[in-house]
Amino acid sequence: PNYKYKYCHLEMSALLMVLAGAVTAYVVIYYGVFSRSRCRSKATLQGKTAIVTGSNTGIGKATALDLAKRGARVILACRNKQKAEAAVFDIRRESGNTAVLFMPLDLASLKSVRTFAETFLKTEPRLDLLINNAGLMGPGRTEDGFGIAFGVNHLGHFLLTLLLLDRLKASGQSRIVNVSALLHRLGSVDFNTLNTHKDLVTGQSSWHCFKAYCHSKLCNVLFTRELANRLEGTGVTCYSLHPGVIHTDFGRNMGQWMRLMMLPFAKIFFLSTEEGAQTTLHCALQEGLEPLSGRYFSSCGLQEVSAAGRDDALARKLWEVSERLCGVS
Image 1 (tube, helix red, strand yellow):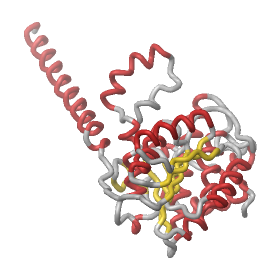
Image 2: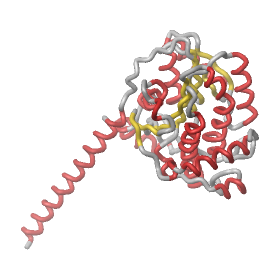
Image 3: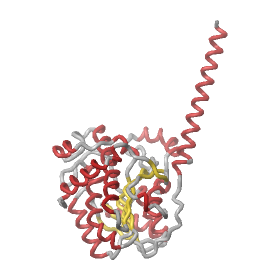
């Protein structure tokens, strides 16, 4: 009996080792190969103008750098002047492109969004790429009283896009890219909560902040879907995307000891900022995507969204409510 027990124990251990190995291999292959797809477009952008929000750090900065290397005139639309000017210096130096500029934009203030758009339209004759990249997760309220994730991740970008649409249309074959997230699958839109709380959640706890982020990322997907419908027949197309899990963003709110403990894992499996920018660049530059306007991408490929993300009636209502909240209806 003891021999049989040892044999079964060894057999079970071997099985567990095989399963663990299979899971490890799957994770390494998935994150090491598929999620590290690269934008293959060779497009050059001389004479083109791009706006990238939240481009003083992370994947926004990596996106702006790539566009600058391709010869674009790149506007870094950011809230923090000091960080943005440092990013401008870095990008100009690395790309050799001096047409990289900072214009102040605080997406947590609808007044700031309007001021940015007014300044841009007065000073820039064209707009070929609008990359709505900025995003955050956390507690707080915008200047206008909205939940910070809903206000910045969705509403600020919604208003910015509307104010710049005519310039995009006048510039020919232009594109709008909205950086969403895989977590949109956990999101929902409760208009009653939005009406009573000026937010899509009812509290400010860590759990509420996480849910608010998921909801805002669903709003990005729905906004892109309805925007594509409204842009049909124009030269403007739009796309939403999941950029991947980015190494520099991982553990931002963790304690120092936890970040140190997770660092080796993050280095192996999570994406660098350059890698995280690839799907954004694919949506902005890849030739032949026009028939896929309104769709969602991940790992530089077309992906399906959640059922809520395919709800045209929900997308249309979100648009109408967002217009009212921004005062443009």
